[in-house]
Image (cartoon, rainbow, N blue to C red; front, side, top):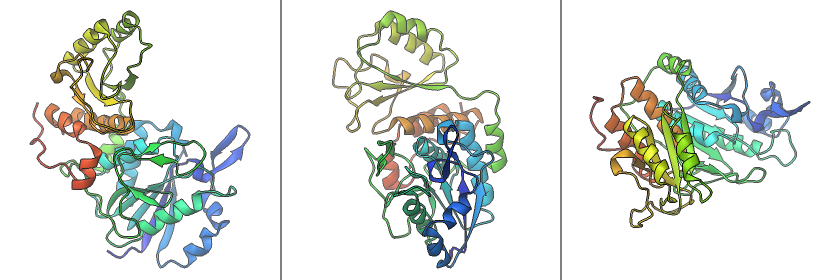
Length: 356
């Protein structure tokens, strides 16, 4: 498909920020900012038209919530009926969560959605923003490029697996388990679950739900006191999901009362996932200090970043609440690692239609 119409969806974030009385805030003149950089001359040389669609209100990405993911996915669906490709300008702080969520919410796409961000504002000295924006636009304009992806600091990335590692310098992100996609050529990122396809109206309805999901992360550290933690867990009956960050290959401190509470909560419907606090390596059950929960009560999440584990579960449980996924499907989809998804494009052999 020849790309003739590109659009920037500007959500906010450092790339378009300007100094204010309380610090950097999203600027409302991104187009004027672009025109003041060398990027303007490059844009004039392209054979496609570029439009701008800012969110209202603009958001520092630190303020992004799952409801915003659903709203953004709905907007993307709507705008893709009008243009050939989209570039989403986002903040770096929660970019990893948003990219993963869009990957699971947008289904099969025959057009590209490229997310980008920057460590410094577009008009700042020695900014990384012009290069990142140019990379994203260049890749989005390539015929044959499809799906959700990230364009950052000279690399094109799969939407799952990146972590922010630096607050000031670049590259700002690293990927413990995935490698960059081919840069300089068209890329097709296939959906993780092709059967998951919902309308923009449904996504907007999800963004306005009065009962948002409650998902927490709990690092299992040496400082946890068992009696205190078990008392806290006793009041977590309204929690939907809990991601435990295990020690090493998934081990845990000796917390018998706390794990008894977790077992009780899991039997009542709490989704519990286990990742490692380490940046690389597999989960293992070879140690006696492994998580003292029955395997039926939690999901091992091999080679998953915390951002992926959280955002993916939020999307999957939303599908489940809508009757679009079964318990078995949620468990299967949550446990697949990003490396396998990048290799295969989508999860083969998933359970059949939802039926609880």
